[in-house]
Amino acid sequence: DELVKQIQDDLYDGLKEEVEEGTRILLERGWPPYKVLTEALVGGMTIVGVDFRDGILFVPEVLLAANAMKGGMAILRPLLAETGAPPVGKMVIGTVKGDIHDIGKNLVGMMMEGAGFEVVDLGINCDVDKYLKALEEHKPDILGMSALLTTTMPYMKVVIDTMKEKGIRDDYIVLVGGAPLNEAFAEAVGADAYCRDAAVAVETAKEFVA
Ligand code: B1M
Image 1 (tube, rainbow, N blue to C red):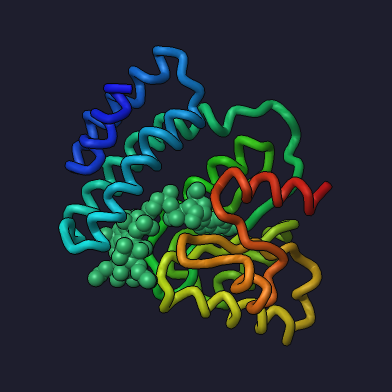
Image 2 (cartoon, helix red, strand yellow; image 1 turned 90 degrees about the vertical axis):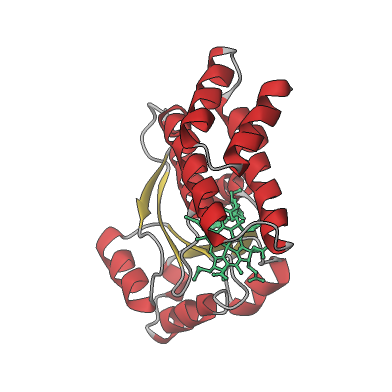
């Protein structure tokens, strides 16, 4: 699709208004919000990621791309979150300490809301204290943690170990995600499951709270 390619290019170039415009047009054409999200926005960010890795794009450009992506996501958010049903469960989610990547986490939050979960978003750079306080305050069914860096993902173990020390580990379902993780890592740190993407996070959460 020409327009999808155009949106991906605009996202790459950090053109927020153009990405927003393209997102609206795809919706007007009857595209389901989830398809717009995955094909145009996530697809575009994947290309950005490859060129970032290869040293073709640098942090300032990637920040602009992320900002453009958030513009598109803001349009999709209410559509993805539309649900009249009572909450099926509650999730507290945050990106771990030292890590400021939040697009994936935000996406997971949006999709969880869309599936009828109540979501408490703790933001980025969350230390153990922040997670534990939120668990105490909100009493969720699920704790979700996100990490995009190989240097920050071990912090998930710090959080889970602290939960164990306090004797509260088994009071919660712990789901983890982020590009550098995998199933073996999730198991090694003592999480209940690794979620490859936002759709898997929703499926997994539903299985656990069912
Ligand atoms: Co960063 N960055 N970045 N970055 N960045 C990566 C992660 C990197 C892989 C790029 C690369 O080299 N190819 C690389 C990490 C390498 C590594 O650790 N091995 C990297 C690096 C190195 C860095 C810096 C260190 C760069 C520097 O300063 N020199 C720096 C670190 C800052 C820090 O955190 N302390 C940095 C900074 C940034 C920006 C600020 C410029 C920007 C973030 C903006 C923002 O988030 N607001 C940024 C971006 C955008 C990226 C890439 C290009 C894209 C990430 C993204 O948003 N993807 C990324 C490359 C890549 O991942 N391919 C990269 C789209 C998003 C939808 O996918 O986040 O994977 P993702 O989320 C998915 C799943 O993973 C899953 O579901 C989501 C939706 O499907 N998921 C969960 C995620 N969290 C979950 C939680 C769950 C469940 C599922 O809980 C239940």
